[in-house]
Image 1 (cartoon, rainbow, N blue to C red):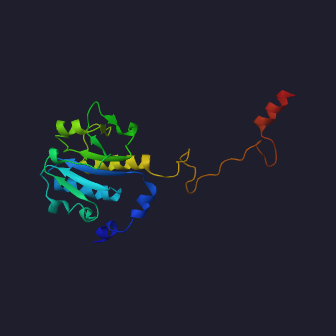
Image 2 (image 1 turned 180 degrees about the vertical axis):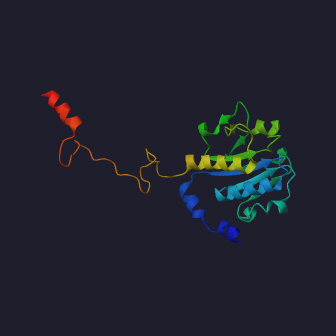
Image 3 (image 1 turned 30 degrees about the vertical axis):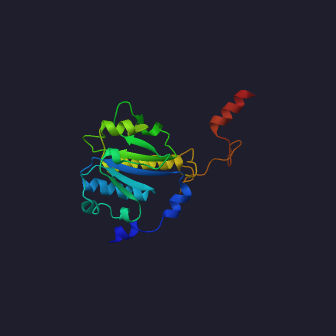
Amino acid sequence: MEARARDQMPRDHIMTARARGYFGIGVEGVSKAANVGALLRTAHAFGAAFCFSVGPGWDARAARAADTAATPAHVPLWRFPDLAALELPQGCVMVGVELLDDAVDLPSFRHPLNAAYVLGPERAGLSPALLARCRHVVRVPTRFALNLAVAGALVLYDRLLQHGRFAERPVGSMMGSPGAPEAPPHGAPRFRRTMPDWLRTAADADK
């Protein structure tokens, strides 16, 4: 109950202030309801404008066990029976997420301002017909396929880093962090009483 209560806390104003454009995320041919539920919850957390699925195969009631945020009650969920029925908002670019050799590595990808990301099952992946409808195909550069919800979370986080409005990272990892040492003052070094032997030797040599 506590987890569900936290998920339902209103945080929309945070995402609205930080992110530009909009996005949706969906699946094709996924049968594991728990994976779909976890992806829906992740999409809701990142501020998705809509979610969708293509083809039958997952049980909405079973997905609720993983989707503790009750995403369909807050975010539009479109269930298309097949690929021919799939429709997206005008100007929304479809981006496939698939571990293909010719896919663009996610860290090098420029996310469209308005996009719909689609993922397939871990083993079979996206169908050739759906890949043909994607304007872009990206891959999370890992050794093997990730869990559906994990891959979706990485893609959405990467989008947030790119289209979000956050302060720049500090140049050094210690700068700005609690307990970080202060930067040394500019100018010549100061010595409390006497000049160190190594510096006195160098000074005498210059005379």
